[in-house]
Amino acid sequence: MKVTYYGQSCFLIETSVVKILFDPFITPNELAKDIDINTIGADYILVSHGHSDHAADLITLARQTGATVVCSFEIAEWLGKKDINNCHPMNLGGQWNFDFGRVKMVFAAHSNSLPDGTYGGTAAGFILSFEGKTIYYAGDTALMQEMKLTGELYKLDAAFLPIGDNFTMGIDDAILAADFIKCRTIVGMHYDTFGYIKIDKKEALAKFENAGLDLKLIDIGRSIEL
Ligand code: NI
Ligand code: MN
Image (cartoon, rainbow, N blue to C red):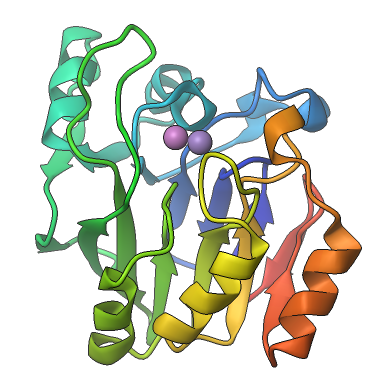
């Protein structure tokens, strides 16, 4: 699968049959100013929580793409009031078989509100199983014991983990998280976008390597194969 990074926690995963966009926050991100969101297509938009650094472009891109928005029940209700009705509401622990594969909504240790202050339900992450691969998109989260359960129940091919610290796990806790979930291939997210979450990328890469892990930090606008 092809993974394109649009900054912060926004990625597009593409296979020959499906395009899945995560946490659309692009236009307010100075680091992503070269990305033209008019060119982004998606069949599904997965939203971990409603904070603006994950949802600023959600309404625009939901309208533009016509994608099904997979999110908490509360975010789906909020989107409905904005006339975005192509939503699939979920809640923690639930899974659903979509036409491309299975998605499970899992706990994220974080808060959740919409940009206008509306309660957004519990913050979440997702475990996706499709086309023979299983990936974990953690959303914004602290390191937590629940990750050990993920490591026991799933054989992950890759995991998207926040590494920017202050609002989420930092580098050292993300290394522990990789151990908890038993996954060697980690795609870093939620770093460098603003002052509180600036990281030393060289240091991050070295620490992961020393722990026997493969940390992928994708340049904004670039793609990798997973
Ligand atoms: Ni957040
Ligand atoms: Mn965030």
